[in-house]
Length: 215
Image (cartoon, rainbow, N blue to C red; front, side, top):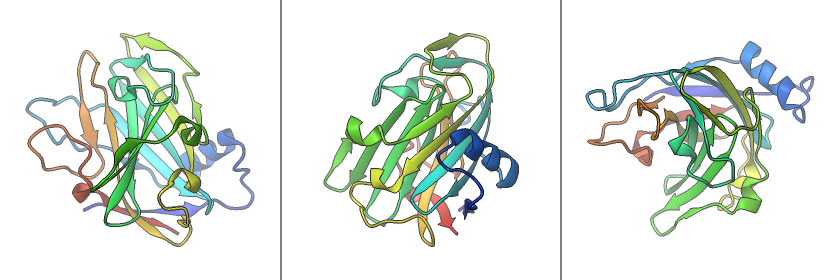
């Protein structure tokens, strides 16, 4: 199982400015590769993907850097099927009974959900609108058969974790996984940070999440 730590963003960085946060994540934080191909026989293609992260106690900040063969971002409304596009994903469990999924395409469109033994639903659009993004490719839509590099920085406030209203990132731990996919790409792909051992593509398997510490 992979493990990582997210540092607390120092007071000198303006967290209201995602561009400043993105530069901090890129220049001052550890970079982690999303480099596992759990289903190599059926889906061998592995784009270049990495991420870095930090927190300010009230929110987690992530920057994804991607280099891939095709760039696709046709979904531009909250909770649309962004996993069909060039998509990066962050799944997090703050207890042993449930988890959240946050999925973003290359222009920052978000799909979010909550899952436990009794509930399986998409988070409300009003709640997800509290997530802010900064996409190097702008707002889209994009259908680019020739790929290249792009990056996406996101801010996910703790309030979006609506079933865990008392959770604060600072000083706590969680389990998480990070993914890159593109279901509708000319070369579909499914890659993960922590390895998944399952017979077919499925990211909704919290038993394969890695460990994340928020310093």
